[in-house]
Length: 627
Image 1 (cartoon, rainbow, N blue to C red):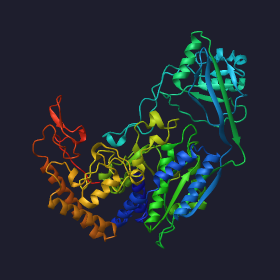
Image 2 (image 1 turned 135 degrees about the horizontal axis):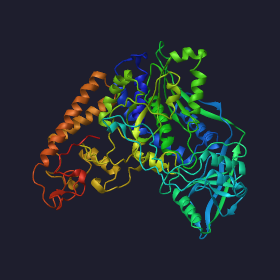
Image 3 (image 1 turned 90 degrees about the vertical axis):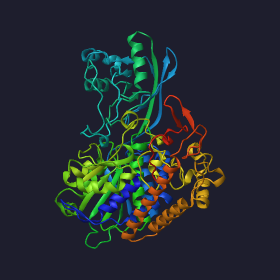
Image 4 (image 1 turned 90 degrees about the horizontal axis):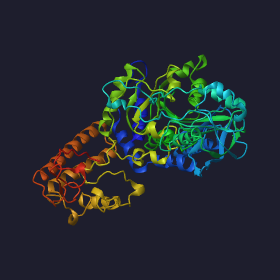
């Protein structure tokens, strides 16, 4: 769904008559929007792009061979799609880093593999360390100073027992009538440690610890793992799961003998110290406006303990797919549409900052600033786009609200006047240019996914990357009023599968074949709906809808498309009314559900009849939406 909205918005923005303080826009060509949806439905590459980033390449830490591989692959894929001038733009970063081997185990008083991950840019340990750990978390700074001799070469537990955890995701601002705190919530503070963490880290470094272990605020095996280059003399550092770290610390406090085995082997990369951005364009066609730029982007880099699925392989895939769709349908934007996949975002928005410094800031770039319209970023969160953060810019709210209106039936909710921090649009807004980021879904994002070892392929739904012609609220239980197929996220890649449920024993392939013959997903002999097969009038209405869709896709005029859409809506409403008429009579035990055909049964606790699928409950008011 995200790819359609981002493609439409950048194309819409490129149709501004002016991009000043009070922008004016031309009417959007609804025929082009119909083509965007058709292209995304039938020939989407978003899932394949996302899968390549996460499964084929994996973690994409800045200045690593994996990141360079991802950037070069994106560049080559954009060239294959016909996007103009795809290129890598280098900027100075520093040395890269890779993890080559890692072991962390408890070997006494019993053997137990531990959950942990080295921090990025951690140096290697001096081979395999097997020793009793030194616990510093319950000691004052003076006491730790006295332990410098024991710390040298030791396995050190550097912090107190972890008692504060990330247990709450950021609020969803589109569901609140009042302003909410924007960004990742901070856990409530626990008991202050006996010694300042920075002072402890300094002593560990100066004393030459063998390796420093620390807990994190994740639970259930979730590790929040970041890192930075500490330079020469830094101690190797490993993040342990809080549960395992706490277990070891408690054993030490009880005087129980504990011995750990730790081996961290890493490599610093100095042959290429550059970071890279991927840049490409769709040139504008209006001679008076083609030098002006509308920009879309997201970061390609990730942290190293997972594959960076939601942060930000899905965003990078959406940016590329939006450009691919626009190119494939032959879109002719008035202004140039430029895309960017940034490097170094996780280390401080470095790639986007370098781009702004190079092309938009300073007196030498004043002309470029005048011709820069807006930057749209996509990063925090996952799943559907509900609206945009407006960066406290009241003047643009009517424009964004108008953009969102056509997507209300596709899940768009509302735009948020507040801004959001810690992502690449800030590089543009800090330089005085408009930049915006969408509001997405944050369920389990802060608690489980963001910057953790759990940010993997499974965190992103296929349907969010390859949503069909309608973008709607996340609801896998909507049934097409035309063919009665439940939209469960299936598409061409898995059309042969049988998922049962309301779709019975039909695969999507079989349902499509039946629809071509009977205008419903099943043949007449298996049509168990109350009232039997469709009436002649229902079939006539369905044929009208199909013909209207075909004419819209063929490229009718704007006025004709508007008329056809009104007719489609009226026909769909007529089908809904016929469905309500069908189920208005009594539904007895064993009667087929008019939605899916499953036999009705009585739920005694509520004294109502249902088919086992609560979303089909005929005792409730049902509103179907067309797929």
